[in-house]
Length: 124
Image (cartoon, rainbow, N blue to C red; front, side):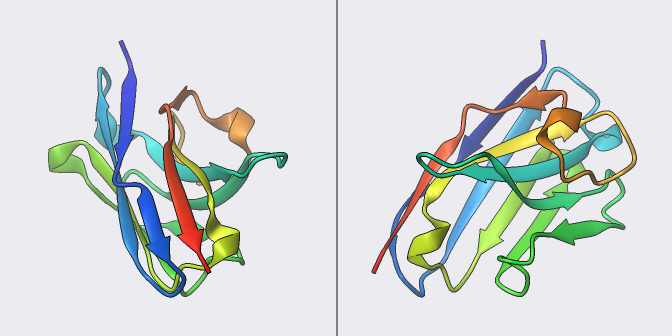
């Protein structure tokens, strides 16, 4: 059974940093493209960052480019999202997702598996 479990969310002041992690089980992690998405109350789920199975391709939303870094450790079946210079508008529930494909896709419907989410709150 495929399972993704996020951790590392929390409350941080504006300008601070957090790293969220996503541990995968039940499938061959190193063949899956991974993505991070976020959803704020009353808003649609939006793409944040994605990384190919080989670590060779990364993609970022314009809103986080230069502040966030996605990475993965295939030996640990874990994906990470390092978030720096956080702003109140980054407040959301952050979800990791995996897709059995080589393209780093920004569309949520292209991802097969999802975690339960971890809350990130940035105070001003």
